[in-house]
Image (cartoon, rainbow, N blue to C red; front, side, top):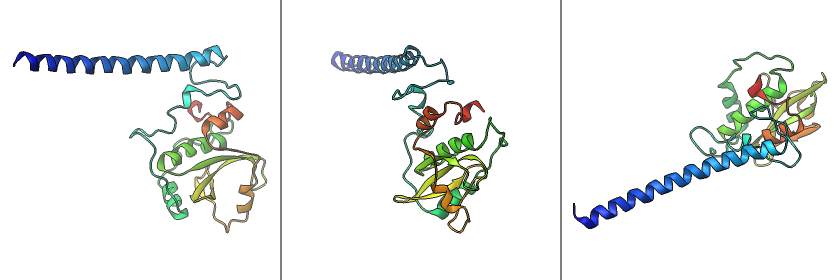
Length: 192
């Protein structure tokens, strides 16, 4: 190998090595800064974290990124949503105050978002009149939402006698971060 080609090869190797080191250093700094912000602001260490109004948590930065990377294309259609929901069933039983309607809604919200469905978590008086409840509102056409009962899970169709009640909620959350800010222990399915 001529001397000039060897220098070029070594230069390319050094540049790639420096870039790799820089990426690792930046990643470590970002993790450390995010974690330290949590500590400095009074958050508890680890995943059992509290919140202060207006502060972001490092825990949720990658919450909506699928293992394949990125977000999928947006999906629409009530039948398509029903098909998506029919593919799954709960492997963990409903348990009040542990894995109930709020944790199930939070878990299912993430699952649907990762499948391409724009989903909100709604909380309020139970649409059937049986106390407090959490459920989902899923965008099935642009700016049109369909209720989903997360505990079952299934689509609530317009012919359901309680259909309109699903749009009468006390709070609505676009992300898990918003829901956990509102109630840190109510939507924490990862602790169930």
